[in-house]
Amino acid sequence: MSIYAIGDLHLSFNKPVGLYDVDFETDVDKPMDIFGWERHYEKIRDRWVETVGPEDTVLIPGDISWALRLEQARYDLEWIHALPGKKVLSPGNHCYYAQSKKKVREALPEGMEWVDADYTLVEGKVVAGTRGWNLPGDSMWEEETDRKIYERQVGRLKMALESAAKDHPDKERIVMLHFPPVTRRVVSSGYMDLLKEYDVKVCVYGHLHGRSHRDAVEGQVEGVRLQLVSCDYIGFAPVPVQLG
Image (cartoon, rainbow, N blue to C red; front, side, top):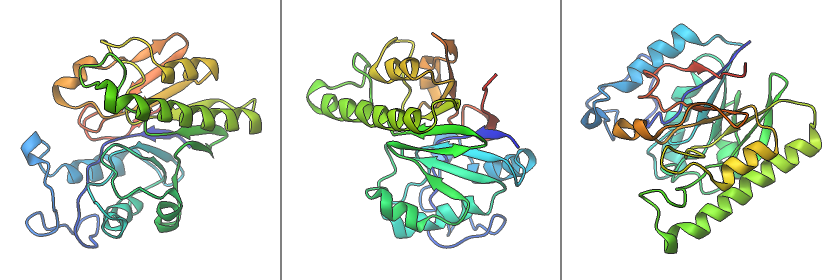
């Protein structure tokens, strides 16, 4: 059994489709070809099937579906469900359908979990998660609009890690964030402080695409392994979570 991760699937099916039964012209609402992701769902499917076994788990940290409503997101979630392995999902900034954690969880097919300001257990390890947000000092940061959201998301991560540490003090901890906890431009944050405080072994994150890959920080940072898993960054193939 292994734990893999892949983020930012950005699916947009407009009706129920099979893994190998997608009409690109009629079944996809928001093609990603404009970003150079030609029929990227086929790449994800083929590489996922080659990599992930039925007893493995895949972490998907946000931007899973472009759907605005949960009813439409179900098409993307069902397509993911048909892929091998168990899945643990957390929200991204484009997951507009995920206004209610309770409703998302009720809509998920069997073998799929949603974590948001809380945690689950995967193969004897804690997996905690929340969305995250822009970092103070980043080029995209706007103090008036971002400060409140940022601080709330830091609080949500703290809530998840506090609960996990209380319930399972001896288990290794993995964190799923959509936004990076630090970048090459912003070398500290409330998220990073919590990752260190709660002895998190690895944090997987997404959100960075194209030229933004240059801002990514990966590898060991003050005892925490950071791992960018945006699907375009990792070649549209789930990658092992690097616990060692």
